[in-house]
Amino acid sequence: MFSIQTGMYQRRTQAAGGAGGAYQEGSELVALVSTVAYLGLEARAVEVQCQVAPGMPAFALVGLPDKAVGESRQRVSAALTAMGLALPPKRITINLSPADLPKEGSHYDLPIALALLAAMGVVDAEQIADFVAVGELALDGRLIPSPGVLLAALHAGAADKGLICPAAQGSEASWVSGGLNGMPVVAAPNLISLLNHLRGTQVLPRPEPGEVAPPVRGPDLKQVKGQETARRALEIAAAGAHNLLMSGPPGAGKSLLAACLPGILPELTAAEALEVSMVASVAGTLEGGRISRARPYRAPHHSASIAALTGGGLRVRPGEVSLAHLGVLFLDELPEFQRQALDSLRQPLEVGHVTVARANAHVTFPARVQLIAAMNPCRCGHLGDPALACSRAPKCASDYQSKVSGPLLDRIDLHIEVGAVSAADLVLPPPAEGSAEVAARVAQARAIQTARYQGTGMRTNAEADGEVLEKAAVMDDPARKLLAQAADAMRLSARGYHRVIRVSRTIADRAGVETIGRGHVAEALSYRRRMPVN
Image 1 (cartoon, rainbow, N blue to C red):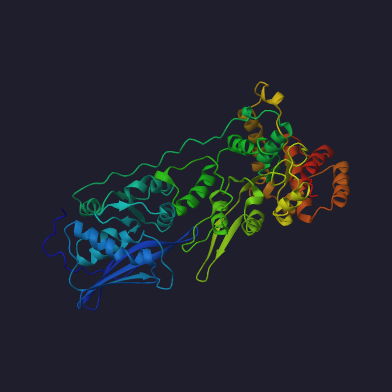
Image 2 (cartoon, rainbow, N blue to C red):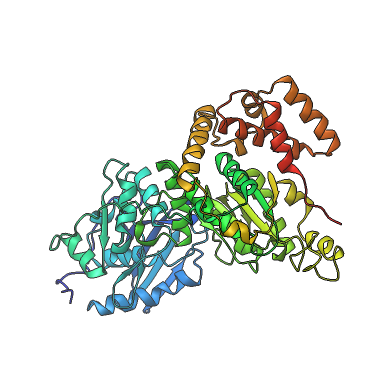
C-alpha cells in the first residue's frame, strides 16, 4: 500500500505561470496538470485544474465533459481508495480548461488523479509541471491504454514537455520521442509505481521504441492462374495508386486478385508510417505501439454504414476510408453496399480527406486511399452464360448495376472484366512471375513518381492534377490526337479525361518512357470503358 506521510495536505505555493504546477488561489490551492483533447488528428492543449476548498464534501467535474469523462470521478476515487488514500472531506472542483472545448474519452483519468493528488500534497506539483499526462485508470489503480497516445506524444514534444502514459503504450510514445531530442517518457503500469517514481523511491525504466512490425503480405500472384489482363491491370493500378473495378462471375478470382495487391505495393516511408499510425492511434487499433511499414488493407462488409465508411458516431472516430489511408480499401460485392454509403465516398476519393461535420465540431481525417472494388455483372452473377443465367437476364443486370452511381464509377480509373477460369487454366503450372517480380517493377515506377513530384505535396500519378499533371504527362502528337478523338467518341467527362492521362502516365512509367505514346493512351482508354448496362 502507498504510505501517507504526515502533512500530505500541506499547501505549496508557486507563481501562476502556465499549465502544470500549483498556485495559491485566495486561501486554497489550485493544482494544474497538462493533458490534451483530440480533434481528428489534432491534439489540443487542455489544462486540468483542481481546487480543494472548505465546504460540504463534493466532487464536481466541469468543462464540457462527456459521459466517459464524467465517470472518471468514480474511477479516480476507487483508484485512490485501492492505494489507501481517502479523498479529503472538502469540496473538490475539477475544471477542464478551455471550458468551451468538448472533452471526450477516458484518457482524462490520469491527469485528473494527478491534479487531485497535487492539490492534496501527495505529489509535488513542480515534478509534473513539465509533463503531459494521458491514460485511463482501473478501479485497482492500474493504468489502462487509451486511444491517441501517439498524438499526445507529438503534442508533448512540440510543447517541449515530457509524457506520462500507461506502460502498455510506452513503446508507442517512445517511437515518436526518438525523433524529438529524447523527449522524456514515463510509462507506468499503475498509479502507485508512478507516484513512487515521482517521489524518487522507485525508478521506472525508459520504454524502448516499439519494433516495426514485419510487413503483412497477402497471397502470392502465382496463385492466380489465367487472368493475364486482370494481372496487368492490377500491376498498373499498384504502380500509380489508381482505383480499380473488377467485374466478373462468382469464383473468377476477383477477391484473390485484390488480396494479392498488398504484396506488390512498396512499403511505407517513415513519414507515411507516422501518418498511418496516427489514424490507427486515434481509432485505438495501434496494438502495443508497433509501428508498421505495411500499407493498410481494409475490407469492410457490405452492410457497413455511412459512419463506418467515412467516420462519425457519437464520439467521432475515423472510418474505413481513413483507416485505409495510404493503403487499399477493398469493397467486395460493390452493389450490395447501401447506395448512400457508397456515394459518401465520392468526395474523399477526389480530395484525399474526409470532414465529419457535427454541431459542435468539424473533424477532418486523411483519406488518400486506393479503391479496389469487385462486383458480379448481375445478381445471379452469370450474365452472358445462357446455361447459368437467370430468367430475368438482361434486365437483372441493368437493375443490379444501377445501384452504383455514375459519379462514383467516374472516379474509378480502371474498369476490367474478369472472365471465368476454365478447368484447363486451373491444371496449368503456376505462372513464372509472382508477387516479388511484379513488386520490383511497381517499386521502380513509384520511385520515378517520387522523384517527379518531389516538393509538390503529391506522391503518385493518381494524385497529380492541374499544372503538375500537365508538366508530368507530356504526349507525342499521335497520342494527343487519339485522346482527343476518344474523348469525343466515348463522351468522357473532364474527370474521366484527366484520369485517362494519369493512367497513361503510369503505363509509360512502367515501360520506363518519359514521353507518353499512342500505345500508352490506347491501353489506358481500354481500361476506361464502362460495363455494359442493358
